[in-house]
Image (cartoon, rainbow, N blue to C red; front, side):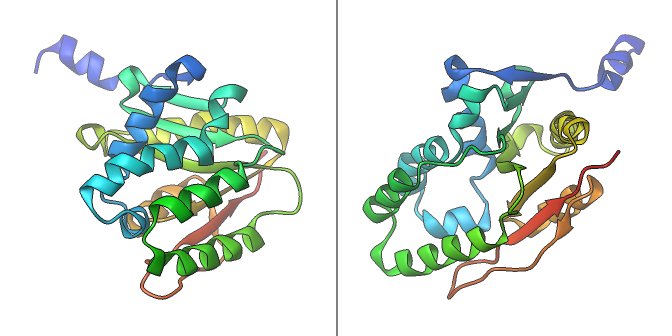
Length: 204
């Protein structure tokens, strides 16, 4: 490795803001990132169902981030984070319709039960919500996730606001913990893998 290569490798990861024009690229990154996620692949277990339906799930659940300037990404969309600002929520009716039309009927009852339990963990005071963060598998474990977290959480700290997420993959909990998130509990219904709600208080 040349000195020039060393210099480039040590450069900090730049975080940019995506707009509605970038929506498809951001969703594509999340779809790649979650291709082996335990919970999401329980919901859409076949490759066809996952690739056909999960992009729409992401759009409905977190697409408003592109409207509010709270969708972040790194160079060439190697990684992305879709945040919903305080007061902004997914379209519940659209989400229910999508689940009813695309998730196997025998799993819908469990999924709706989990969604109901998740709602009970959401803070009652204003908070930033992180539905999705992830990196293209070819760019994972290169610091992109931490860069995205630092970028967004600096805003939370500046505002003195809470940050909240649900971890659907146990492997990611240590990353969130390093950035100040604390486990609130565990949600598991039937054969669905566990979901871990996590909360971060602002750090001054």
